[in-house]
Image (cartoon, rainbow, N blue to C red; front, top):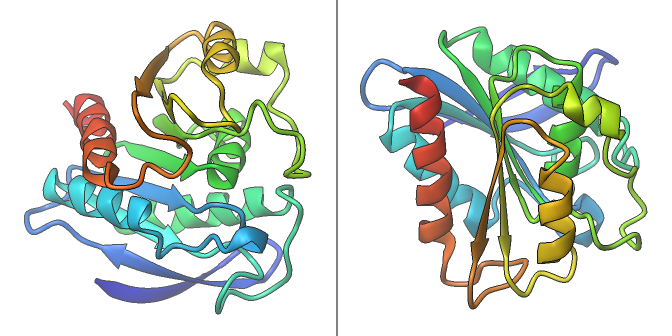
Length: 214
């Protein structure tokens, strides 16, 4: 694991960690964490599990802290300025590694990752976990418009626990119908946090990424 720092378009320095695979990389991934004002950071067990699984499948994985979180510069941007953070992370990891890039996010990070990918063709696919569809209390921008989602013609994996109050099954299925290449996976017996199911979740993301790279 290599600690790194990289700069955003608006001049902030973000902290991250780059996990390289043992063999030459077949692609890259960027992971986006949950809400920084609710304790979210790159070090959550969900993201650790996904990072390890992707690296074992040959991906170079960059996990990072959004602006204002931990030792990243700047201040919280309400889920808007953080789009620049994801773009900078994609630039950083693609500077080292060829092949496709998958961007994954959990909760707040899923929302930011989705909005960044709308305008960034470098993102080959998205893995969005617990995308906040059913909860307006997080005070973050809503999802992209229906026309923007229809234009997102890249693979999108939508994952949620069946008991997730922020991403209820009917809302997620309705959302998926707007995205041409979306697939949905609902995990029974868990909720937004996937306690003790992190490895199972990571394997689903890893298998999806592996299909992208084939």
